[in-house]
Image (spheres, rainbow, N blue to C red):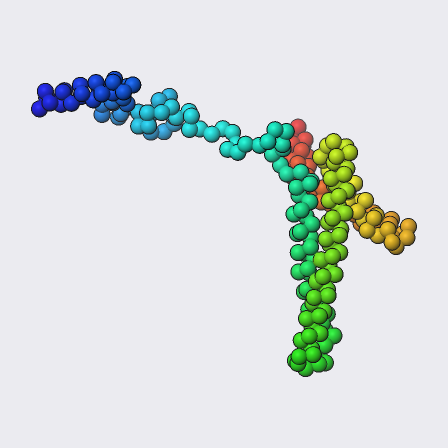
Length: 210
C-alpha cells in the first residue's frame, strides 16, 4: 500500500512537473494552522493570493474626464419628467375635488361623470404644463450658469431658481417679476439649505467642541 501511494504521489508530481507545475499539496497539520479570520498572505484553500480578491476601488469604469455624480444636464431630464408627473397627479386630484364640489347638486349620471372627467383632465394637463415649464426653465438656467462659471455649487442653484421665477412671471409686469424672483430665491435657497443641513450642523457642533 505504501509503495502504491508513493508511486501515485510520484506520478502526480511527475505529471504536474511535466505540464508546468501542479497545485501544492498541504498536509492536515499545515492546514490546521491556517487562521480562519483575517486575510493570510497565501490561502492554501484557494491557492490564490487573497489580496487580489479585496476590492478597494469602485467596480465600474468611468469615461475620461467624467464625474462620479450626475451633472445638471443629466439631472435635467429627471427634473422635467418628475415635475410633469407631479403636476399631472396634483392637478388630477385638484380637478376631482373641484368637480365634485361643483356638481354636488347633480345626481350620479352620465353628464356628471363627463363633467368630472373633463375637469380632472383639464386640471391635470394645466398643472403638468406649469410645473414642467418651471422645471425646464430652471434646468436651462442651471446648465447655462454651470457652463459659464465652470463650477457646480449652490450658487448655481440659487441663481437658476431666482432667474426662473423672474422669467416665469415676466408677463405680470415689474411687480410680478420681483415677486417671482423673490419666490424663486426663497425656494432655491431653502433647497440649498436643506442639501447642506448636515454639513452645517456638523460644522457647528464641531466648533462648539473646541
